[in-house]
Image 1 (tube, rainbow, N blue to C red):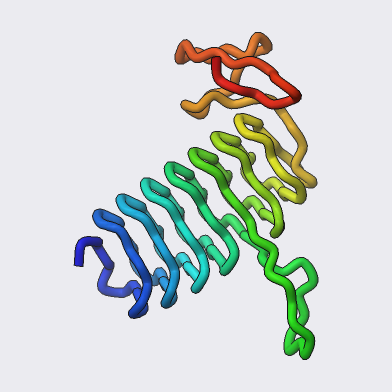
Image 2: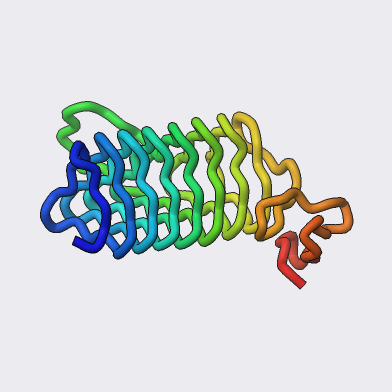
Length: 184
């Protein structure tokens, strides 16, 4: 086994776990779930069949990553984040439901207790504020907060807020092009 599994974690046969990943107590990783290398999956997480998590991803305690959710490399998912994969949930439905996929792109951060509706994309290096309810796509490098989540500024690749000139304290600069923030 090239990954760490806490003695109270459940990693089902057929789950694909990358080298150097750590899975902590009471986490449940289902068969056919995919987790890349050097990830940290916190206490009490549930990673469902069909979920895909890239490499160098942190998933803090109490997060459920359901079928249809893909989290790309270097993302940070804070504790209690809720991913939704069924827009019209009903118990014991006779009719088939349509899985709406959600994509969290490279380097994005989702704050504690945020809710992410299905069928959307959170762009690369975007930041979703704690407690936000995300119901539409979040462009790359954009900070969103509130319910429903609305733009509150722009973020650098390093995670800091950009100033009004789209410059960061780390020295990086950005520009707007077709209503999208891009690095210079």
